[in-house]
Amino acid sequence: MYKQIIIARKDLAMSSGKLAAQVSHASMAFLTTQMRARHELPDKCDFMEGGKQYKNEGYVKCPVFVTQDCYDQWIQGDFTKCVLQAKNRNHLLKAKTMAEEMGMIEGKDYFLIKDNCLTELDPEEVDENGVGRTLTCIGFAPMESEVIDQIGKKYHLYVG
Image (cartoon, rainbow, N blue to C red; front, side, top):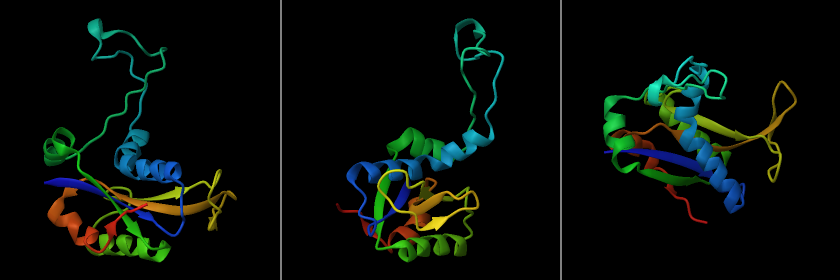
């Protein structure tokens, strides 16, 4: 069985809306990363009747690649997600360390989600462009439960 886990920081005391947005970013990251890298403006829309021209109609083609198992068991299956909690930043980063030790790759198998601190969070770091950011979540691509549970079993379900 395939499932996806997202681990969110509990110490940030995010509002329900902020938490939902950050978890959503983490859940979608494995798709949006590919979409951003592979977008194009196609001449025709092959899924619309008559191959309608849409170059100037605001459409973008964004292909994504998943394994056949991921497609069959997760996308066409139960779409199982588990949201887990980390006590703090260091506890969250332990998931990253475990993932790396298992041979997982950042930007492919897992994604660190950082908020731009425009609403309720204060920055805990400032990037090279002077943008303040705070690490909120780590999201994993969907994978076999037996694999991802090696990380997930170290965390509790997120409770509000």
